[in-house]
Amino acid sequence: MYWNERYECMPEAELQELQLERLQATVRRAFFDVPFYRRAFQEIGLEPGDIKSLDDLQRLPFTTKQDLRDNYPYGMFAVPMSEIVRIHSSSGTTGKPTVVGYTRHDIDVWSELMARALVCGGATRHDIIQNAYGYGLFTGGLGIHYGSERLGASVIPISGGNTKRQVMIMKDYGSTVLTCTPSYALHIAEVMAEMGIKPEEIKLRCGIFGAEPWSESMRQEIEKRLGISAVDIYGLSEVIGPGVGIECQEKNGLHIFADHFLIEIIDPVTGKQLPPGQRGELVITSLTKEALPVIRYRTRDITSLIPGPCPCGRTHPRVARFTGRTDDMLIIRGVNVFPSQVESVLLEMGGTEPHYLLIVDRQGSLDTLEIKVEVSETLFSDKVRRLEDLEKRLRHELESTLGISVKVTLVEPKSIQRSEGKAVRVIDKRKI
Ligand code: DLL
Image 1 (cartoon, rainbow, N blue to C red):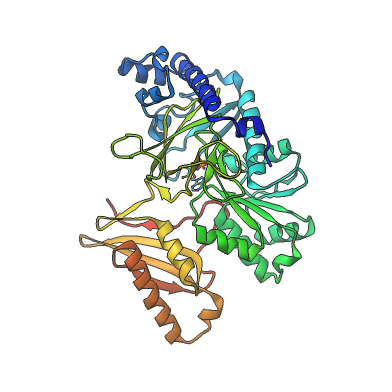
Image 2: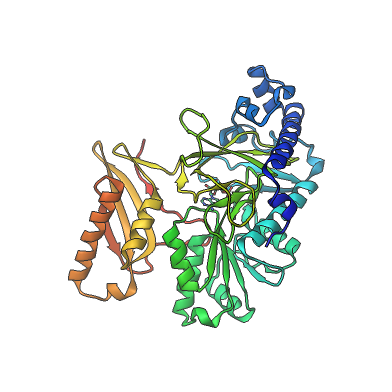
């Protein structure tokens, strides 16, 4: 099922022609309408006319989150404020958030892309979509909302939070699709079980989850607990919001909508493009954005290009599930550690809940890593010996996966703070 077969299945040569045409227009717009870009191009002696092929993309300078911050709030906009009809901002945890704007045409394109994404993820106009992404400055709520309406589905704009009410509405209103972060989906499943409602008693059949990294084992866990099929959706405010890419029914990589976004995977240190299969940082150039065109935006998100065509028939490139961000990679005693590695170990071992917290600290000059893990209800009421045994096995598994020594602390079920949006998985107490 496609939303826009002509564009989603466009032959590669035709797609590249369209991309080049749109890239040239974007570069021209950035050069003439955004002083930041004009300066950046002039510094390296580049003029819009120099972009003659898609390969010339590599001649363009990168844009970073810092650039958006330096031009806070509206300095990167390519249109006057009278053309802006919507403002969102990114959920920055450190420093100033970045502010993004949309023209009427941008909102139209975004809605269209979101409708396309929902269909790709398995939704139809006959669905009742319970949209539990936060409404507000975060792009998740309104992005999914506009896409659902464009699709013609029935959207329930419930936003995040009030989990018991989520479950009640899900049951009473007959929601068939749930959209929220994967960590919140898991929490909804947990509360549903507490309320004594079984997956067979609800009509939910599909989940479209994203906005934070999650593992394949987490997918299986959510699918089992809610009795649904779950897909991964990706996006970021600086580029548009959700709807940059999504998995199709093959669930083997996320298609990036390449008629609107040009992607590269680069080595985050050298900045050089990497071949398919090699993991690196995703860099995105917008091809149709009016208000806030972004040129070679460094997402900091880590993935790789999946080579070869997808059986679904879409010709747009696929990237692998995101393993994390270059900036949530922890360097502990010189070793690179990603929270997602911990998640995979926990889910594969069993006996624990996929709720965990990494606490990094420094004693003297030595980094320490403590991993708090919730024990599952059944095991918790069991003998102390079994808990000690679990702790030992977990520590062993985690140490061999991460390559560093860790302290495992088993905690009571439901004692780690649940999130209604993006989960917080790391507390870094080191003062570096
Ligand atoms: O999270 C947009 C979004 C809303 C995506 C709803 C999907 C669903 P920001 O708040 O700007 O925008 O955060 C963007 O979130 O750079 C990634 O680090 C992370 N992220 C988003 N989707 C995924 C995903 C929205 N599927 C940042 N897997 C991005 C892993 C994701 N990380």
